[in-house]
Image (cartoon, rainbow, N blue to C red):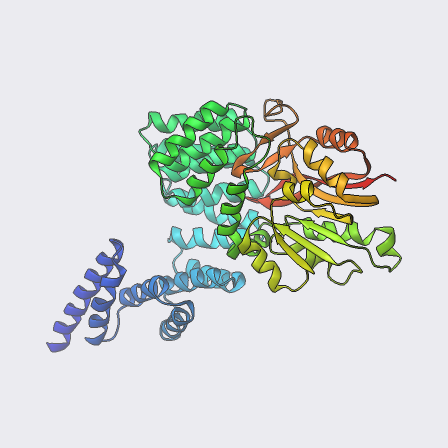
Amino acid sequence: MDTLHYTADADGLTRRAAALLAAGRAGGARPLLAAARRLGPPSPEALGLAGRLALQLDPPDVARAELDAALASAPDHAGLRKCRAELRRNQGDIEGATRDAAEAVILDRHDPTAKALLGVLMLDLGRPADAAACLREAVAAEPANPSFREGLAAALEAEGDSGAAMTTLLAGIELAPGMVATRNAAILLCVRHRDFNRAISLAEGARVSGVADACTFGLRGHALSSLGRHTDAADAYAEALKLGPDDPYVRHLVAAAGTMPGARRAPVEYLRAVFDGYADRFEQHLIALRYRMPGLFRAVVASHPVVAAGEQLGPVLDLGCGTGLVAVALAGLPVGPLVGVDIAPRMLRAAAAKQLYAELREADVMAVLAQDYEQWKLILAADVLCYFGALEDVFAGMHARLVPGGWLVASTEELLPDADGVVPGDGDWALQRQGRYAHTFDYVRRTALDAGFTLRRLDREAVRHEASAPVAGLLLVLERGP
């Protein structure tokens, strides 16, 4: 009788702990679960709940030890497998996470969450077809689940079928018009594929459905600004700020909006605030986006006649040096001394830690070009031009600071026509989403020649990847004549 009494109490405590966790009160759930576990051997439900609490409350190493121990005693517990899969994914162990998720699916073939998790992990492994197969089953089981639909849409887009991805998201919107995440995923898909009019239509549909979301208005501002509708974009950003005054993403968009109407460059204060706040995660983020410019810059510099002959090329000015990624890429080449310039002090501290620069200066790029009368044999400007709209002044300044025969190696984002064949902005450059400018191939070429440069190279190159899609860019190698 005592055993039955304790078991009932343990089950009741476990149910109460589960209710607290579902209500977002994980801290209150843990003592109840601990009390339940003292009353007798943990039930499968208690084991699963313990795993979810460990995932939320414990440091990764502690959570991993608890999950490993729990699975050692209950290797067929699908819930614990899912928890460990999530933890392993967060720790970067994608293959281990995939094995756990696959085991969870085998143990409970009717669990759509396990199938969705396996699908997302398959996408992480670069297997979009397998990912889509898993996520289709998850969506079929729970058609209104927004995260399942977003995962399936991402897998379909990675397969190259953006139409099917959009159909998946639109079906989710129809099932649940007020589901913000699904609608925003559809708007973002339109923006990535430059279908700005459809993005605006979807965002306006949110208002009709009674949705008031800061991100939705922010994305609407992206689309409007990409079409050159700066006044309407400013209104959208203002609405976004009202709804999400403390949302860092929204604040970033609004800061970018301040540069829009006719501004020829991003304000210095904006750049300092953005990159100082970004310094700690800057390199990790760019690596995750498969940022290509440091490697491309190294290949260009290695081809310079002086470097190719094994001789020293310098001095070198690295404009917008950030944390020093280009300097790292150039390591081992006979290049230097390097002088780095950046507007953000925290970025400069990260660059200084690499001990690759002879000097680092906290200054605005244009101030250096206008006031510094040093001459350089090589100027590097990786993703600096994307914070300038008009390039006439910056090219003139760079030309003046090079010695005859000196090289400028630079990159920017390429301005492409939208889905209707219209080139946004003034036809030469436009402010894009996330506060960066893009330039047409012809404008960059024309402006560089007008500044007096000889064009050694102007190549179309992907700058990085966003949402699994390459970001179109331009790689410039310009030479000052004798």
